[in-house]
Length: 189
Image (tube, rainbow, N blue to C red; front, side):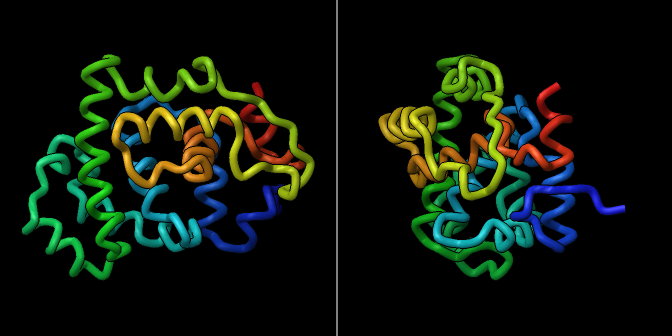
C-alpha cells in the first residue's frame, strides 16, 4: 500500500526512503548536523537527488564528515577531492567545506555544541508548519535569514538563506511535510 507522501519525492525509492526516515526529523547530533551543512552547501544550484546519490561518496571522500580532520585539509587533499568524480567537483564548494569545518569547530568550542548554537534560531524546538501544498512552502523565512546572517558573520560559506532553510527542513528544525503526508502527523506528535 502506498502511503501519502509529500509530492516532491515522487517515485524515486531513494527520495522516498530519505523522506520517510530522515527529512524533517529533529536532529541534535553535531556530526550529522555538520554533514547536512556540507551537503546542503554542495547542493547549491543542483537538485537534492544529485547530492543524495553522491552521499556515500561524500562520506568516504570527506572522512565520514569528521570536522576536525576536514578542518586540517591542505592544498594536496583539496586537489585530490577535485579529481573525485563521486562528489561535486566545484573548487569553491570544496574549499567551503574546509572553511565550514574550521568555523564549525569554533562554534562548538564557544557554545559547547553546534546543536545548541543552530537550534537557537527556532528557540530550541521544531517549528510546526501546516502547509497544504508544496506551493505554499517558502524558500526562506525570517529564521533562515537570521541563521544565514549569523553563519556568514562567523565566516561560514555557502550558507545563504535558502540553503539555511533547506538545512532547517532536513534536520527537523521545521516540519514542512504537507498536511496530507503520513509523516506530517508522525512529526507533530
